[in-house]
Amino acid sequence: MLHLMAALADTAQGRIENARDHIAEAADVASRPEVGDGNFMHMWFSRGNVGMWETMLAVEAGEGGKTVEIARSLNPTGSRRRSHGAACASWLVWMTE
Image (cartoon, rainbow, N blue to C red):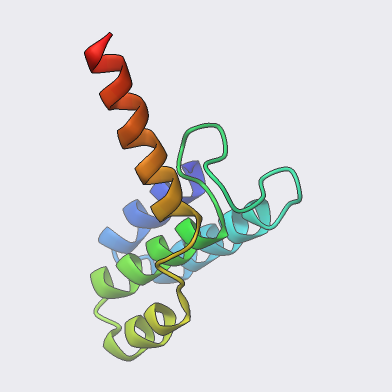
């Protein structure tokens, strides 16, 4: 997550190449077997999440064509949606106890 946040800061300051380096590092970490495709350490960190951040950063950088290309490669029915549903259910259980 730190690499993703650093990528956002770099993008906002116009340092697009630095941001791309951070995205590449985050993608490398997300592809490790111990991270998997789920809600790693309850931080919503996964390969899919890196793709969502990459899309958002392309929008921030004004790269419309790249934004569409990245967004088309994402799977919105993947682990983040399932994890979000599980988190909502856990919150409801916690609130009713």
